[in-house]
Image 1: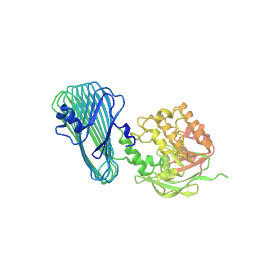
Image 2: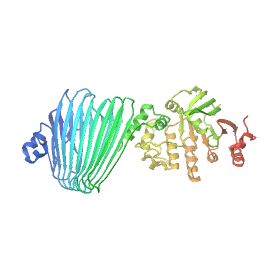
Image 3: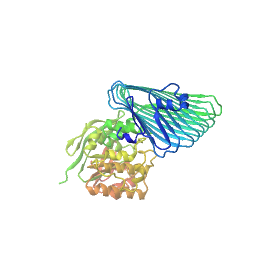
Image 4: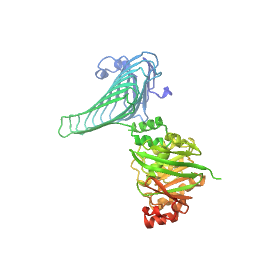
Length: 301
Length: 243
């Protein structure tokens, strides 16, 4: 991390390196939170070994930042993270999970719960940078209270050998969620499972996937919207195959249990357009530069 | 003596197994403006694409030289690096990529200030995605900005004047004159109707019909007058016929 002091929670391997609490927040390691606040037990379910606890009680007008680093070989991080945002607060959070070297063969397992209380809003920008031998399993649940708003942007431009990303959103009444997942796959196997449960009346949820399959990449994405209440949901899943050794499977699924709900999906997988590629080459870019530019545009949501 | 910048020799080009160019010869000297007129589907755009090395167009015979160096088999990007730039007639959209991003990436030299900032029409376009939702006129401005950014020795404009109103045509012609012509950049102006020639005054005007250049004249006004009066079919019999 370039500027560790600006990170509010920073863990390297298994050691908490830095906690920087700001006014109106409680930031602890999750084992400390388990000890100090009994009410956290229902969210952690079992005593956590490591991870963060962030409780935001007052408005914070700058982005909070967390960082998990793997710096030593064969580290297995087994994280339990809990974020609680109190009523009517508008919060920005930036999270980075990464390895310091390409060949550390680490495991990063992160189970997280993010609780948004009534009227609150969260914009969470989550970045992953992994090495060729890493194994990464994030499993995040967002619990959205009444009239809340969530924007979750997950970007992984350097995926690990194996990524299993599970994201679940439980949407309360009049809540809205935007889940944007961007993965630039190269030498990787990726399994994605996103589910939005539209549980509250007038809840809305959108999932956008932009997946790129480069060399030796296999990506499978199962995206689901489950409408239990009269809400609206949409799945927008797009894949781009760059290399002949890549494979992308998109499985959008709509389950509707309420006749007033409206849920839709669109899904497509294609290759880079020859015309665009030639156009950019005829502007002086090499084939690789042209592909990179097209991909960067595709990954922009 | 002015040196020859681009020389095309007996060029035959196929696309989708159909022969489109059937033996094209011409040359452009340094600092010279050459106009190429012709009806739809006469091969004008194919010629531009072949000069830039679009792999969709196969050269079956003939050669292309730039400053005496044969470039017939060079990939497109190498031709651009050597100093040829093309403004496309119908450029594709590149989603998610801002025009400013592309212009910055292709600018020669790379440190050059972003063109467009000085050109009023370009300012708003720079912040938009390349050709996404651009009107016909906006596409022309975008292509012109890119050509200027490339700092070429030879700029090829494929129907830059089509679909433009008089005011915009005048403005674009002024920019071409200031940014390219006054800097001794050679121009190949492909045009269907020829309006732009009144502003950029070519040294030579050629007519292409059915994949061949059939006429070359110094006075573009006379060529335009004949085309206007008799249509392109009459060009075959016109008094300026190159033979």
